[in-house]
Amino acid sequence: MRSDSSANQAETAGTDFKLRGLPSLVLKVIRRIIDVITAGLFIYMAFAILIQILGRYVFNYSIAGTEETATFAQIWLVMLGAGIAMRNHQHVGVDVLIVRCPMIIQKLVTGASFLLGLWFLFVVITGSFGLITIGMMVKSAALRLPLVIPYAAIPVGMAYFTLEFIIATLPGLLGKSDEATLADDNGGLL
Image (cartoon, rainbow, N blue to C red):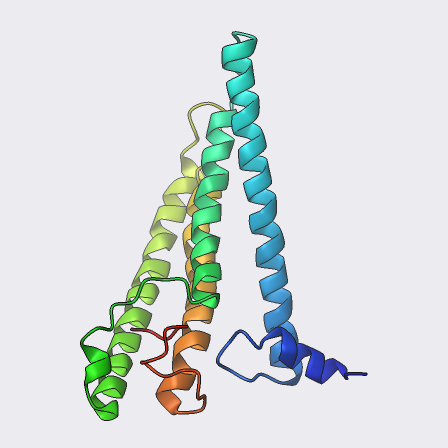
């Protein structure tokens, strides 16, 4: 029988980090919460759109707000889904030229790309706070919900994306994982 520590390591086996103990447990919990939220958002979005279609074309009656709430759900789904895609190494990477370079050049380019990526994510997250402030004052058209609801998806989703971005890229830069090489098609930054 496996201990909790080895079970947590198995849960994070898809990552390039070999986390142990509390960090592994925290990562597992965060990922589980994100997975449940995105599944719930997808189910709600599909249900709301189906209700809207049935109301409009079968009963000739438009159900107010379903389109708007489905749009809010889609925004959250996209922002959280970006982190899930990073976790599963599903983002497109163009590495045709870089894999032909010596390993030191690969590491330098990956390091520079990693730092630029972190800078971009920092700018997006900090820039979204101004948008959230505006969203607290502005209401949506149909249901008069505060627009902070969809705007909050930006910092939350990008913070989760940043976590997965670091987990996917940093071990390859530090040389701590055989799987995290630039030539590997399963992940990495480039």
